[in-house]
Length: 257
Image (cartoon, rainbow, N blue to C red):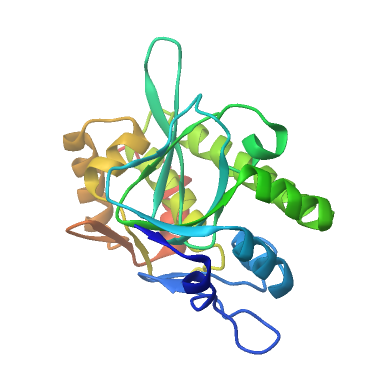
């Protein structure tokens, strides 16, 4: 579904000089923190310029938003829903490297450098995006080069997150690996989370299993252990972290039971 630019302008979140920090499904987005979502680190003027250059589109759950190796036709801002970022090697093996949610900007490096997509973007649930076509994006960046600086900073932050996510998928003790993975996903979901935050991860068990690179049955055993410790709660399409600090402590635990 395509929404005209005029309609999109009516959904820009702002009150006075600052954009309101959006919230989604228990995952707070803090526009005032430097590690918050890239869209919210832009000024209202910058957001308006990008919004005027783009249009809105809704993607159904499971849809491929952009394939790895595809043309760099646009940059996207996630307005609602969650997107899985995956890489494939020459053998056809695919592994997720990140999850992106509302307020995240994705797919900007290809249009800026005029290079093919480096990863596949797939909708985890229903996703709504602001799409800025490549030619319009580059025109905005020529007028406002400081936006490009913020986009590069956001890309560097995401690269660091993806590297940590890949690192946490290895290791001999699966409960510790799972705890580390959940901590990293929690911080991607809620960059302003504190140790007493209650964080909902909007992923089905199949999605978490793919992030952990294990079978669903192995994932369930790990979640059962963390649930027994009172660290997580599980429900349909949702994992809730109830004690973030305890989850961090589990990462460093030496108990192999």
